[in-house]
Image (cartoon, rainbow, N blue to C red):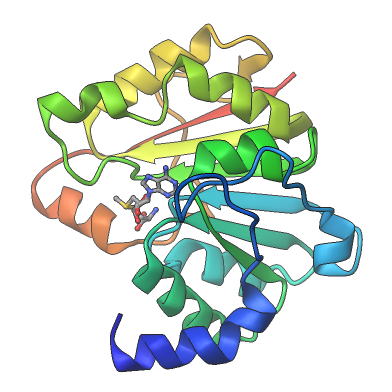
Length: 218
Ligand SMILES: C[S@@+](CC[C@H](N)C(=O)[O-])C[C@H]1O[C@@H](n2cnc3c(N)ncnc32)[C@H](O)[C@@H]1O
């Protein structure tokens, strides 16, 4: 991290960062680690979780414009988390919390079952290579974890600039137990709360189409 990011981490993490008991690796989550959202946010409010929040553009924008909602950013990239805290602080987004952890373990252990109103995963594929396809997040194992964390009626929102990943998302989610499509036609309309990020801009500049999908937890 840069000096500024180190400083932001030291100053802002006591408010923004959730301390997580680890398993083996530094971004793992211990099996018996749980949070109580009412305690973390000090109130009872709808909860939106973004997986792979990157630099935090979407979630900081959302948190600062929707103070009545609680937001959680899940990311393994430390410099991105530091930037997110810095921007959140500047925007007065005190309803945002961050967790430095591997997202599947957050969904499986850290969050209570049926606690999340919306789960966002935007541009999860930074290195689009054939050999990475088997490591994609949106795969059958992920759907059970997402189903566990979401409330009935909660929504999973996905976006990607890679057509084959978008097709995989639909293929996986269409048959995922506990989910119904929440859009009509081939693709969902662009999600309003998804602000333009560097990844989307890069995809567009390379001539790729951006595709959104949304699935409701039944
Ligand atoms: C391509 S970036 C997209 C960032 C952001 N969503 C955006 O649209 O700008 C994907 C992000 O997902 C994060 N990521 C990848 N695997 C993850 C995991 N297992 N748990 C948490 N974050 C992860 C990466 O560190 C990276 O910041």
